[in-house]
Length: 140
Image 1 (cartoon, helix red, strand yellow):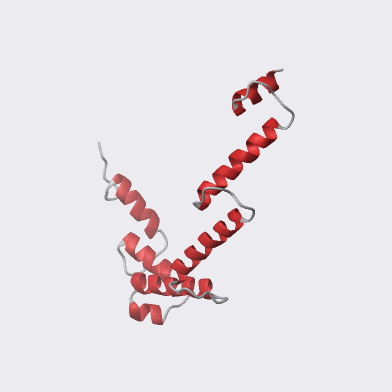
Image 2: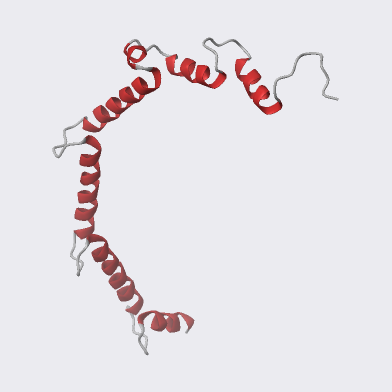
């Protein structure tokens, strides 16, 4: 009884008939898909075509061209990575990049030192937290 009443409330009908809930859900899903696709009425295949269209548009926007070829996304990611490394390390350092250069640069930026020695990161963090203190002095 409760299920039939809730179905009637959902469908707006006074009397329940077998299949009312399925028909209502089907109608609502098709309506939502049509709206998503920018259409007045749903047709089979609309959702697939729309998702494909949107995905292609994003890919073309990302790779900067209208004609996708296998590997374009990988090449674009690599090009963007190279440009980022150039911007972070500088043009010359990026040309001669060796594994670890990014970490060295990040540590240098963080600690303010040109070279890294064990403990530099801890010293920087504790120095920022507690301020610079000389050994053997009291804060009393």
